[in-house]
Each structure stands twice: as structure tokens, then as C-alpha cells.
Image 1 (cartoon, rainbow over the protein chains, first blue to last red):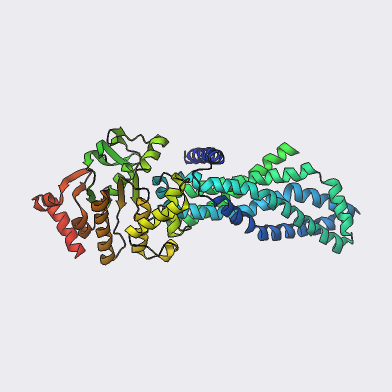
Image 2: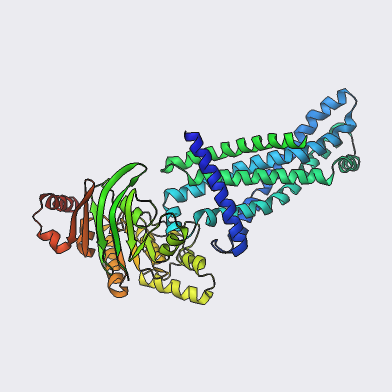
Length: 249
Length: 248
């Protein structure tokens, strides 16, 4: 019964957020001017370093593991193909989504749930401001703008990890490695990565809003909601990735 | 200015009814204080009057218009006519005091020139004695300043009625006295109607034109301060004497 109610609330909030975001894009009212830019800065600029670091390390790790196995079969040359496709279509979207869940999602839930505990959400409502619009529309728009940039950067850095390993472990020159990557990876592979990460990003923001708005009262509830928000976001990301795998392969 | 009427109103949370069959009218241009013991439903009643909690039964009228809790349009129109001062002050911590006070203008009247906005914000900050603090964030202000800042925000669109939830809560006696004086002066100078939930006896004595005392699941007393003081009702006397002793 509780699960059913949670589902109802989640999809009801999702519908509200989509409606209000579309309404804001049409009317440009109901949201504080400048808040999209501010969210763009918080979600994008502040997430860049951690996303870059993690995708680089994943690129290096996967390359080292794969190189060792490929070498056994004398198939070293396929490292570029493997890294190119694995990073761009699978690992970058997944790792970027998970990083967004931990950094952006947790921050959104903590902020909104604290606002709820401090009566700020009620205050917005009684000022005639729709909190679901005021707080969520800028975040949904910002994540939509941020994700393609994050993915492009993460793809570059992740493949750079592969280039480094190929040079150091296999002696493959970077130019050769990159030529192979560009041969095997198509524009549609790159776009698939962006679309997947966009969907993951939306799931993170909507899930974080859901946990923030429906917090049980009290400071203890803020911590609980924040933890649950990250767990929910990662579960949604893995579930959606599975759905993508069925659709794409 | 219109009065607010509750007609056969039941309020509560979920399926639990806290107050039943309430019938009262809040007169315009006066300060009405809702009092009662902890858990008596004061804040729930306030939330129902401002549209945050749906009544379990009955209706609330603003003048002749019934509040339809399902209508975003009617609630939106209602919220342009009221201000609310929350117990936690509820200023947005990510905005400066100026931005907090300007927020209702920026949302509801985005076409307002910034000079007009600045004039209005400075005017209401002046009304509550906060000129010069406009660039500070809420966490840089004292409890009393935050309350006055929240009052300024609730007044910025020129509301007909301001609802206050425990306005003196958490304030030292001198600051609470200052806030009471401020509410009284705003009511006199601007003709604003105030509805305050409180259990601070000193505040009640200073600001109340009218008192609604909640007890059990209904209204135990509804009258003026003078009527309350003259009453021989045992519960009424014991409630205020008890609170008085506690306050002293």
C-alpha cells in the first residue's frame, strides 16, 4: 500500500515538474530570474572536476584490465575499439549519472528537505509561488543544458585514460589509438551516450525533488531523505540503463 | 476589506479530526489571537485558513467567496491578498534580506522597474526597522531581525491580512515586546488585519483585540480581551492565570 502511494506521488510530482517546466519555458514567469544560470553553475562547473577525475580513472582501469586480457589473445589492437565504445556508449553515461546522483541529487534533496523543515516551502506556497515550479524548473532546464557538455568532456577524458594506458602498457602511439577510436565510434554512438546521460540526469533531479518534497518532518528526516535520494537515483539509473540495453542491443 | 468566516469547519490531519464544527468570523482591521494548549489545533486551524491544509468538513469564506482548496486559481488569488509570518520566519537562506523581501514582487509583478522595486523594499524594511541590513543573509541576522525581515516580506505586496504563527516564539522578552508593538502599529497605521497564533500571555495582552480560545475539539471562548478579563469561566481564568504564572 505504501509502495503504491510512493509510486503515485513520484509520478504525480514528475508530471507536475514537466508541466511547470514547459509552462515556465512558455511564459518565463514563476521562477526567480537568474536561477537557471545559477543552477547551471552549481550542476555543471562544480561537477566538472569530479566527473573528469572519475571517468579518467575508469578509462585507465578498464584499459589496463582489458589490455591484459587482449594481450593473451594477441588482440591488443582492439583496445581502442573496446575503450571507444565502452566509454562513450556505456561507462561515461553510467559514471556521469552516478556522480550526478551523489553530487547534484544529494544537494537538491538536502536543500529542498531543509526548506520543507524550515517552513520555507509553505512560505513559498503562501506567497503564491508554486514550489515545484520555482525550485524544480530551473534545475531540470540546467541539467538538460549541462549534460551534453559534461558528456563531451567525460568522453574526452575517459578515452584519454585509454590513450595513456595504450601508450604506456602496449606501446601504441596516441595517434594510432585515436584513429581507431574515430573509425569505430560513430556520431550516433556519441548521441546515444548523451541521450542516456540526459535521461539519467532527469531521473536524478526528479528523484531528488521527490525525496526532498516528501520528507518526513525533522532534521533527522533531512539526512534520511538525502541518503534515500542517492539510493533511489542510482537504482533508477541502473534500471534505466538496463532498459536502454534492451532497446539498443 | 472583507471578513473571513469559518462555517461548520472540521480541521485535522489525514482522517484525524482535531477541531469540529467551528463557526467564527474574523473581523477586518483588527488583531485576532488564537490561543490554546499545546496540541489544541491552533496551527492546524491557521494552516486551514491559509489554504495549506484542506478542511475535513465545512467551508472558509473570504467575504462572499468560498475558498476552493482544489482551485489553483482561487488559492493563487488568495495568496496575493495575504501575508504569512511563520514561526521559523521561513526566509530563504540562499537569498539576501533584500532579495527575500523583493521575491513576491519579482514573481508576481516581474514588469516592476527595479527602481520601484528597490523603493518598495526599502519602504517595508523601514517600516520594520531594518534599513541597512538589506544586503545580509538570514543566517547573519539575529532572531528578532529575521522575524522582522519575514514580516517585511509578508507586507511587501500590501496584503489585506497577515497571519502570524507564534510571532514571539524564541525571542527574548524585549524583542518580543518590540515585535508586538510593531504588529500593533502596522494594524493601526495601515489598517491591516492580523490573525496570530500564540500562547504568550504578554503578547495576548498587548496585541489582542479579539481572542479565540481553543479547548478540546472546539472553541471555548470567543470574545474581546475585556470580555475575557471579566469572565468568571473557571477554565478561562485558570488557563490565563496558569500562563501568567508561567510567563512571570
